[in-house]
Image (cartoon, rainbow, N blue to C red; front, side, top):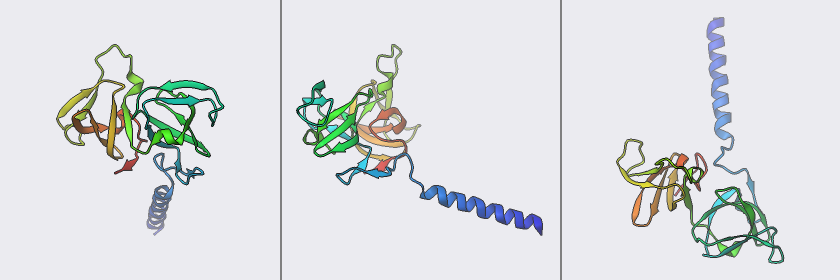
Amino acid sequence: MRKHFIEFVSSLTIAALLLLAASLPTAAQSTSKGPSGLPLPRFVSLKAARVNLRVGPGTDYAVSWLYLKSGLPVEIIQEYENWRRVRDADGTEGWVSQSLLSGERTAVAAPWMRGNTDDVFVNMRRDSLDTAAIIAKLQPGVIMKLDECTGNWCRAETGEIEGWVAQREIWGAYPGEAFR
């Protein structure tokens, strides 16, 4: 009888731990909200083709960097009035006016592999499976628009090509994050 009781208690303990784990936020679920009411951190993209990255939240602060590519994904990590502190794929941080940002989700193909002299690519596949046909090989640094992510795969488009990329091979969606 003692053996059955221990097995029952162990089963209850495991079930309780699984319920507790399911209720805790994951890395993809933010636990804080900014003054805007939106989650922090979160990914957005640059709306304008010329965006000043400033050292502080206002036009009185010096420009530390100039972005020349609309659609570039950035991560909002802080908010102050109409200013957003952002981080890019290279880890550069600074402040950008909210009016220069878009909620459209974009991503960069494996930016950590840029400059690699090997023939390294991110495979875009016909379906969200490792065994699906490869329809394009994306060089590290290619920017793509994200249509949805499942937590493991993102449906993306770049130029005229649309397919699926492994979420672990892009910067612009959190691990395990799902959205449509």
